[in-house]
Each structure stands twice: as structure tokens, then as C-alpha cells.
Image (cartoon, chains in turn green, orange):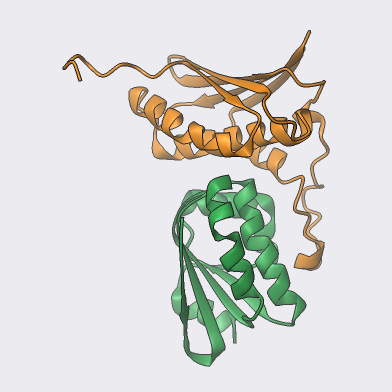
Length: 111
Length: 148
């Protein structure tokens, strides 16, 4: 599981995950995700290259999102494939963290 | 290598009750999926359900006690794969665990429960689920339709 970050315009932090967000993948990214979430105010979680998401991996998205929300920030999810999106929707998290497949729309949602 | 045809995957995998051992699932499922022409989406569904089932056994059945066995068996059928998970833990029926009420969306992410999502995922991604209490353990059977 790889994680990369990029600072976009308007204070948006894009964090891109790459690989399987299973238990091992979650353990590999949790620390960095939490550090990023500790300072980001507008967080775009790029899931385009996530090939698997299980319930343990969901925590790796929910906990950082909580941290950002607790400081009045915003979080959006971008570009999950069909199966990953199905996990997100089955969990119900999509009602709290909007899912976008268009980057411009994802960025607009963070403004 | 002897040059013989590659050996088929073992139909049974035994792991110990450590979350780290779940890493053994991936190569096993990938091999079984390749041998049985399992579509990628079905393989994804199998992984969601097995990861959840096994982590439930480790965390709730064995209560994180290490060194206890969990056996996963795969039985290929004509149009399905049947996975059976057996442990030697005290009675634990994951299907009886109350899932968060469908439709009761929390008002904020602070209220979003981290637990209780797994069973919802299993019900979504498995074709069927069945629990059976064994004399010395538990058995969870999960069926996945394979549309080739």
C-alpha cells in the first residue's frame, strides 16, 4: 500500500492511496493518514488506485476524516472503482463523505 | 522446478489467530480464483467476506488470544465457490451480531460507528451465509456464485 500527498490550490490536500486497503494496507497507511489529517482542513482522498477495501480499511478513511471534521474541515472521496464504491456505500459512509468521480467536482465540494 | 504442471492450490488453509496471518489469504485466494476462473469482482467479494470473517474470529471468537487455529476450506462447485471457516473458539455467531440499523444514517462522522459494518458487508457480498455451532468450535459457511 502506497500513500502520496500533494498540496493543491486553495489549501486542498490530496492524499492518494495505491494498493489494497486490507488489514495490512490499513496498518501501512494509518500513521501517515493520521498525521495528514492532523493538519489538513480540506482533504481529498484519492481512491482511484485502491484495488481492495475491507471493513478494517474503512477505519483508515473514517478516523482521519473524523479528525478533519472535528476542526471544521471537509473531506471528499475521489474516484473509487465500482467494487470499492460498493463497500463505501454498503457501509453508509457515503452519506457523510461525498464520493466524486470528477476531480473538478471533488475540488468544488471542498470549497 | 520439475517442469510438471503447476500444482493446484490446497483446498484448505490453516492460519493462526493473529491479524498478521490474514496476509496469507491473498495468495491463496488469488490461486484459487485463477484455477476456478473466478471473475475479479467475485474475488473481491470473497476477500471482503473472508477478511471480515477471520478478523471476527480472531477479535471476538478468540478475543485476540494468539496461537489458536482457524481453518478455511474451499469447495468449488459447478457455478459457485463455497468457503467454510472453522475455529475452536467459544460459541460466537457473527450473524447474530446486531448490525447498525439500515437507513439510520448518523448525523455526523463523529457518530459513525466503526464497528458493526462488517456483517453488513458480508451480507452484501456473499451469496449466502450460514452459521453452525460445532461441539468444540464454530463453522461459518459462505457461498459465492461464480458466473463464468
